[in-house]
Image 1 (cartoon, rainbow, N blue to C red):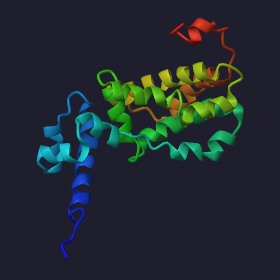
Image 2 (cartoon, one colour; image 1 turned 90 degrees about the horizontal axis):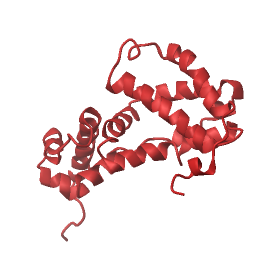
Image 3 (spheres, helix red, strand yellow; image 1 turned 120 degrees about the horizontal axis):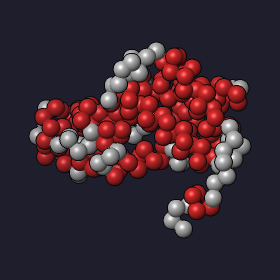
Length: 206
């Protein structure tokens, strides 16, 4: 009887394509990464990239997913002293950049957000509907969405300076030094007093 289904080498081929794409998106961003370059890095014909993923956009979406599951179960992070949540938030963010499981996706999204709508949407979702927002909601006395966006804008700018632009001495500064400097500002964003925000500012579509 003839065998059906995928050939034995196909899962490994797909994994090579994903690994090559993840590395190239992290190094170059979406716009400067071509399907041909991904195929060359993976050692396959570019037609196989289209076969498995359909388009460069679909490939980007498949490989640039942030592993935020551990954020949801970060008990010590969420249950600690409310007066030090800012420092813990910065420390958590810096640690994500150092982890091999999350660094390529973070770099790829950050490099691509200005030119690719899908990457921009991933970055927006990180601070509108995913784990970090729900964490901030537990500590914020008011305006949790605005506070999450303030935290997000600060940490994205910090990541851009350290890991994309590599501005010194910030790029090579010790993480705990960054925590001690930036933590109080993030603390204010999360738990401090905020000026009254108008309804129009909350919903710019009005």
